[in-house]
Length: 293
View 1: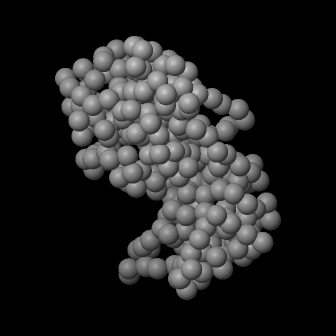
View 2: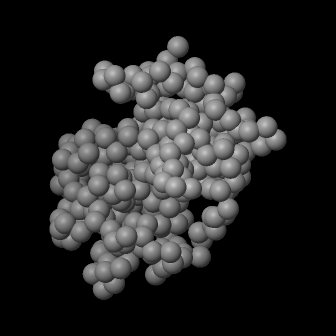
View 3: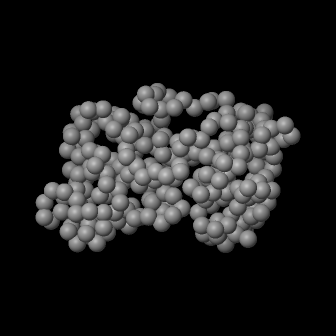
């Protein structure tokens, strides 16, 4: 059985490019718990809050429930559920999962494969990260689910992976003249820029192209906040700051809150600005809540 192919083909709810990382987040969480204790079962009532935090922080802006992936991941052959009444999930209702003592864990065949081939766990985890989340979030997401992975290798993890265009970073940074489009940061060591990154507006993992019209040159801080939905860009190319962001320190006000309504810095004349369709995707799929006035 090709577990990488099965991982890549998880059935997910989709509509007009809507993000639905519910199953990938549950799988990453389960892999982290498998590393800790390969034989443990995960009682829904005990891990519900953990899963809800993951969905709130790394899922789509609309509110959702961890009961959905806990029940539906069974259909992908990678997860099993048992209740006080025996094998099988009682349904996707939160109350049903709680009152029946529902527990879940990786499917027996997958657990056996992970024991036979220790590297498989890391390959599955990296495939989930690559297919569903931007690179800026990989490290902290692994920490959030308790996954301990070796440094990433350049090898191809699966034939289903798209090839990134390595020229995009240089093209985007050049278009924005090596300055953060939000704050203007332009640090260098000698001639080498430091702390500047090419951010995909429409995430590459969700079909966003490696193209200047889908990119922003951002400093490391603002890239992370952009991918977490704290910051966005409106159709007039002005910075959005989520009302959900809370920061009382002078640094938080200066580096985040004060950006609200500020026009983007760049791109330089002749370079393509971010396309409207990519801005619309980010606003609907990543940006959290309403923007500050």
